[in-house]
Length: 185
Image 1 (cartoon, helix red, strand yellow):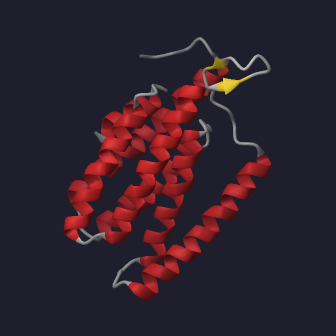
Image 2: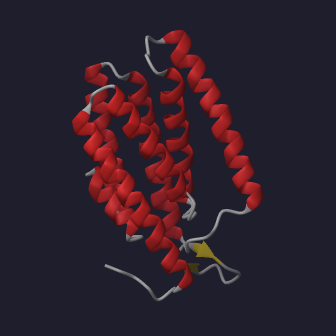
């Protein structure tokens, strides 16, 4: 379901949100029974942001006439980019402290970084900001290096696919911005 979610995201299909929501619900159960509580918390966030994204994408952009037009891909304004970077740094610091002081995590610094990046990137996706793909490329690349280090090779393969799809998503969304009639289905 996560791969379908990502594919629909690349194609800008609103159906990405229910697949993301279902994937997160299933992972909540998996992480709960496995004792991965921080990852379970991230999945709870994914459930909430999936509902938010689904609502935001379905409402579209409302103009003066209050009629909805489809939400368009936009570039992240510089002020918002700085705000998001600040939020990322605060989240990273908080998560790092929590993981370092309250868990037996062997990689609290990097785990906190990828989690903070995922939180910010998913919010950016809900707002249909082009640069969310760039955040995902960094998060996926760092994650796959961590999984190599931890010898989780099946997960490495999954994150190689995620990183490749993130690059593809960025290229396709950028083309879609430059040529609004471009839609590859």
